[in-house]
Image (cartoon, rainbow, N blue to C red):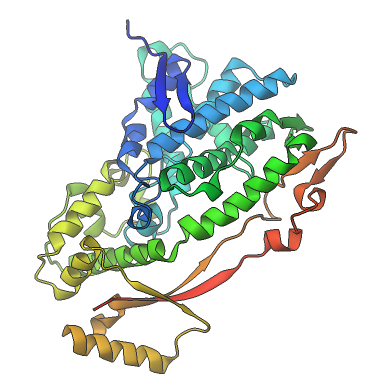
Length: 417
């Protein structure tokens, strides 16, 4: 009989435990295994060459932290059944399952009107159906992932489980800050995840952090802000992303004209069909093709398109493959129509392209992020006398006005030719 109780060696947290058969079966599903072919940080490797870790590895790390969080809460007298513990671990393991290659790029080009969160939920439902058909599951009174999906959707009666998965201090963020800083070599992102988890508690069905952990929360918020501007929104990473959007947009335009482009079948499906949210449903062809799409499909296509007869696509793909990314320049105000005309004329003359195609070689883009949101579940601090206060008022060093402010930077990204 197959031993499904596995131990996985993780470079960030050490040995991770797969404690039961159901978790192992979920982990082995093709939808989950696909995440090992999708980089966690997309194109950040253009800036940080070590950023080659995958969404699969991140999902495993987040699952481990959920296991640790459950153990910590149980030690404080919070009643959590084995079923709830497993369901919470499954929910966080699958929280990123709907991400496509270079996720946000894909949402802006090949798939219209549906987010990766919505696709994640559909994929969870499909895994639930697939596991329900297994002989060892047929005696269950409910499908094996029903509880996990309810937690993910915040439909489970105990709200704090959802907060562990999706809130302003969840195990997802704890893992990706630790993991991304580790692989990028950026020390500013390191957070005390073990300390934060040990300080978690539950009051009135809401997740709180005991006062002893307030300094770790402060460091967590500062680290998140620094990581966004230093890694996730680094102007060179965004430049690479904007170049990729232009490449896929041009490929989509050529496909709409009937130009045949070399690419893997899954990518071909999304290039040559108008795929919207209506095409996505359980068992649909859109779902089947989406589940086959990964980073290698996009990167191999770009390499092949360097020799495409279309000059616009070939120039963009050569620039991408040779790391001649768009040049980013900070703007104090949006480009005037006159400046756009000047840029258009420059690329028409310089590259020998049609005027109608010049927009593929420059783009204005606003970069923004926020550290803390008043609209989401707050990060609450539990004092010894039982009172609970929001971190924005509890902290002596964090200014709530600065925490919730969303700084914006306007950039012009343009082709280097």
